[in-house]
Length: 366
Ligand SMILES: [Zn+2]
Image (cartoon, rainbow, N blue to C red):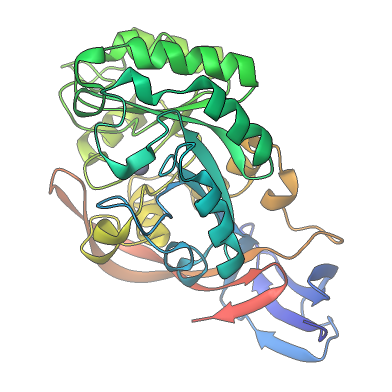
């Protein structure tokens, strides 16, 4: 990475064209379009550049089934430079996830599953013995550069007969460790009001647009009081599309009622990447363009907003002196069929297509 290169005539989200000069892994200059100097020129005519996309909910531990995948398959090969593994591992295997960072290029952070077994089983909170406080604290201490929060999946098939108790334990651990919680929501019990009312500022509800019976909207399509109260407290709303957790109908209800996503994440793993309905981040972003959100808001939901949540603002901006993590993409006027988790379809007129990334100063184009 000793050579310098220029992204020539790249378009910012504001449509302004610029040159970005990168040397020794860092952005060294943001120049007028056409004026940047470097050893290699990459023509970015008609291509947008943003800070590198951040996917706040993925499954990047290939060994677990069904919720597993390879880091770079869901990262730099799809326009995403930073992924956050959402609880694939608990205390038992977090060391292996951290070790796998050295074999991949995508930046990786993780939510530690409060269950020590992680997603080795999909009912990981059905036995409270698997929530081991000492091991959790040890893991957080040892891997503080990777662990950005705790994960608890609070739905019927995960918690079994334990109801709300795992969430209460998670919340206590979160307070003691000063780490926010990401909570997966789904089928009841526990009922959704009980789950959401326990969340605090900076905690994350993932799957907030799911179309299951226990979702966040009433039968008339209005947001539950518990949801609007949570948003007011500063609880963060994350999409976490996944195989089963994104409904166009619910997303349309949310838009009508001005309940806005903070972050757009995929909940991607091998199966929903290969067979849909997720496929990749760009396809997920296309769904929000289709819903009528401006490109600027859609891109902010995978750049500045998750970067700020992570308290790593440098990951969400394009600035001289920063390590270069950038995403290149275009918006193509071409009809595309979009399918949600309920097999509901919509046809969009435009789609977002990833064209490449710069990851820690290295350019990869598709
Ligand atoms: Zn997930």
